[in-house]
Image 1 (cartoon, rainbow over the protein chains, first blue to last red):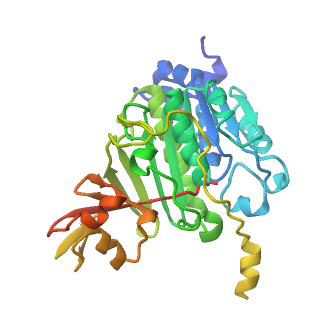
Image 2 (cartoon, each protein chain N blue to C red):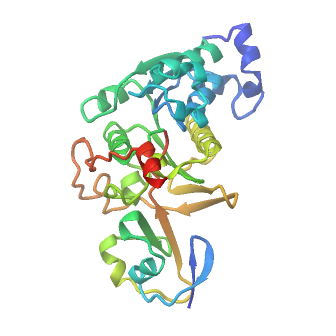
Image 3 (cartoon, rainbow over the protein chains, first blue to last red):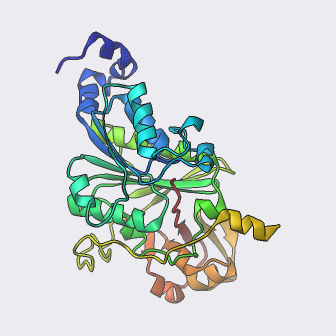
Length: 276
Length: 66
C-alpha cells in the first residue's frame, strides 16, 4: 500500500523520524489496537492513536457522557452529554483522521466477550476505572497472548506499565488478587486531577506506538509512577513472579472468569449532602 | 534505623515490614510490598525483618482511569 499525497503530508513529522520512516508509518497504519474505556485515560489514547494513523481502533465502553466527565475526558465535548461515549469518541476520531477504522462496542467487557473481542486486535490498552475490569483485562491479555499497556490514576498520582504475556511481569505478578471493596478509593470517591489522566494516557499511547514500531525499550518489568504534586517520575523494577496465580509456574487461574469484588453504591451527591 | 521507602530515606522503629505498614497506617491489603527488589507475599510481611539501609517499595493499587 502506497501513501497518498495527503498521507505523506499528514504523517510527515513521523516519517521524518529515522526510527519511524515510511516503513514505520505503514506499521502504524496496519496496527489494530483495542482501547478499553473511553474516559480519562481513553481520551488521549484514542486521540493520539487516531492522529498517529492507527489502522484499526476498537473502543469499548458501556456508558454515556456525563457532565462530571468533561473535566478530564477530552474526547467528549459539552454537546455530547447524554450520548454513548463510544459514539462521541468515534465521531472525534473520524473528524481527526478519516484513515482510521473505528469499531465501537457499547458494552462492558466481560468473561464471555473478552477473548472474542481481543481476537480482532494486536494490542490492548487499559483505560478502565475499576479493579474487576483491570484484572479481567490482564487475565484476558494473558489467555489471548496480546500485549497490554496497563494504566491507573488516582488523585494526583498515576502508574503504568507494559505487559508482554508470558514474557514480562503481569498485573497479577504484582497484585495477585483484587483489593477488597472500600480499601482503595476510586476517582469518584477521591477525585483526580484532570490533566493527570491526559499525562498517563499519553504515556500509554506512546508505549503502544513503540511496541508497534519495535523501537526503544518497552516499559516491561518496571512500573513507571508519576507523582503530580512533587512533579516526580519514579521507576520501580518488578519481576515475573513464579508464584503468580495467572502466569506463574503453578497457576490457580486456568480459564477466564470475571474477577469478583463487592459492588460499591457510593453516590458523591449523597455524600456531599451528608457533609453539609 | 534508616531505610529507604519509595526512594526517600526515612527513620523507623519498625522491626518488620508488617510493623512498618502499621506505623504508617497502611492496610496491607492496599499495597504490594517490595523489599530490596523482591516482592514480599502479604502473608510473609510479619516475618520479614528490616535492617539498616533496606529499600522498600510500597506499590499502591490505582484503580482510576475513567
